Image (cartoon, rainbow, N blue to C red):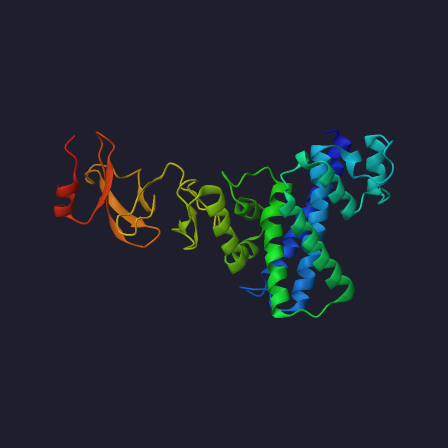
Length: 303
């Protein structure tokens, strides 16, 4: 990317993140839910503005600066930067940006569902900001769902290169939010619910996290999609005989073979909460849970 275009890109990106941060602060300020029309209005304004700026940064990165310009398409990068700094650079509207993406569906990960949510949030924002509509509790609940969808499924992939199969939106927010706003987000019930859904969708499993106690930890990815706890190469997982959950018993693989542990260590089922011991045979690598010496002697392998 040309150095002049990079400066424009960085400025738009920083502003997109700024509006996103302010939007999250507004969404979560009253605890567990958006509680009134004013909060819904301000939240929509910030998140919608962040989406528009994020679309521009994405198109600049994936296509070029000229893909977001309404005019001045023949100017050099240096002249574009000069006009940008003087606020004389005219860019496409939000609707024009969406139409460009719809015409080039291979350009983004967006499906018809994503575009539907883009349209819906824009509709809420326009009605709220321009008409200040009276909102029922159901209306506020629906807006809240749209905002959380935008925060997790629209803005993150536009602003980052993460894949939910290997990372989480929380990783981005842990880096960009201050401690208070970050803790507010990961304790916000609608966000937690969405992180549970994402963990299930992209990893297949979601159990209670050892750190935040939300059902947002996946043994398949070894990540908590809510608080970003990561247990890479530090834990093992086996099925639970009590509740029949797959890979739900977690145990410490780093210390199970330490002298004195006799190849066994405490285990915990992240699904049913059952506590037991886990044995890991150093010879055949067979693993099982047990509840005391008689149970161990009955199950132990003869390799």
